[in-house]
Length: 204
Image (cartoon, rainbow, N blue to C red; front, side):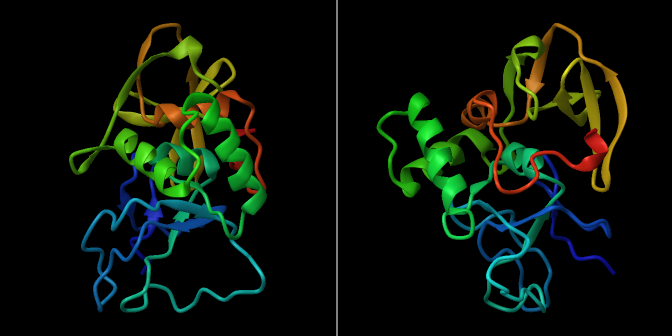
């Protein structure tokens, strides 16, 4: 039975057998039986490499340890509100901070970045949504279309699924409900390319 540790663009945790291209965490979310009991624990939401220094990550969901989460790609992780890990993705983290300081010059510490993102990704206990113009969004951003998360890519919107992107529709020029936090849209607009895949191969 698949574990409830796959992350959707709206930051929900679901159970699905498909594997993602990124790993991460947002604290310990599970109980001693491995059942998810909370959506997050703390403001540190990170996205990591699947492999780093030969570290083994099994068995998963050990009691008292952080909950191992998996993302389809980095665009999904950004939409959910996760940033690059400062340990396993040090160069990405440094570049990420430089780009964010273009928008928030005073934010130099990880705790300040995390506080900014926390306010942009949550509305109470729910994922915070934002307003945007579709023709102003960079590739890699996520919007809601027909109530479903869609990836912005070129002239198209691609429907997200846990296993990849499937249906494609034309990208209209209109107002949209933005899923990706605005600060992370800024990072994407800067032409972000990190050490992990920004887009799943099904987006090609």
